[in-house]
Length: 283
Image (cartoon, rainbow, N blue to C red; front, top):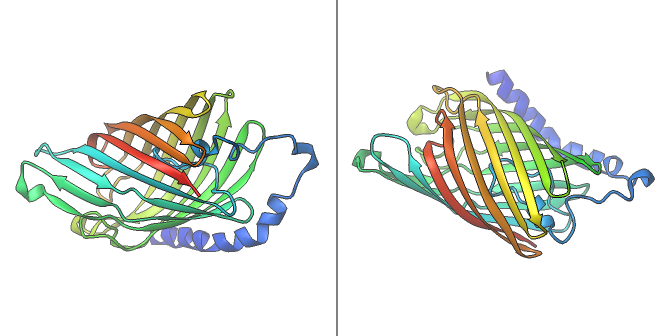
């Protein structure tokens, strides 16, 4: 398991070098495809660019010279005997466009306040901070592909943080069924550690995300998503959830959204269901 983690870490550390050496060749203009519109640009591009409110990530990188800021709030009913609830915020993610349709991002710590009718289960504190790189692999009139690597830093408190360094490597493929309907598949493998309060043990997990979107009009988008992990902790098995919601583009650079999610199986996220709201900005 430790060997898998070190391999993932090596892949992550090689990403910036690959970006700098390969972006010119990967995105040189191809005369045969000059008529194909980039799905990550245009008047409603922010709906395609945003990672939120889905748990999966967009196949689009932030545009060169621009940044994307995402913020949100979640209220969840927590699994357990105490009829607990939890609030999670600000769900902040800041993404910077790099040359060659590449991206660097920072996922800031979230603050969680968890309450229960059993006082011993009350807790609050910060989650771990993560950083990541994404590289678009190219696009056609139907397809868009990307690869992504994310490092979870040893940070956060003993209940919601990460005891050790984690790494996740994913591939993302988006497909346009029609001009209004799209599908996105994200598959990943990673090594993570439990919080200190749960023993801080390391485990390897495989992630799967399948998302469908429908754009009935240019500024409005609905989505549904099934996502899961083969392990949700070192001593737990697979977990799967479903979420769905709506996004609205107020202006070209400002999006707002509402979401709702439910547990399907296992203990991914520790909730039975949740509600959330947020927004995204393109600078």
